[in-house]
Image 1: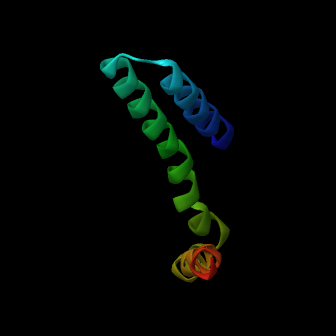
Image 2: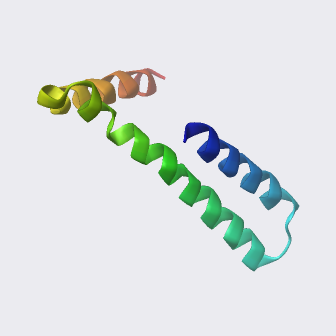
Length: 73
């Protein structure tokens, strides 16, 4: 799913750079944002698959590890 979502996202943004019509640009943006949903849905269930009894703690740890580099930059 990750490959599909990133590929669809990138293709639509490359097309967006070439398009001059508003409605086609809106369609490309809509498809690109919808494609990220495939990736985000897969990420949210990973803690449940890895440790069903401790999914809340694992999810919190994932968010902490992901947020610390952004806070430091």
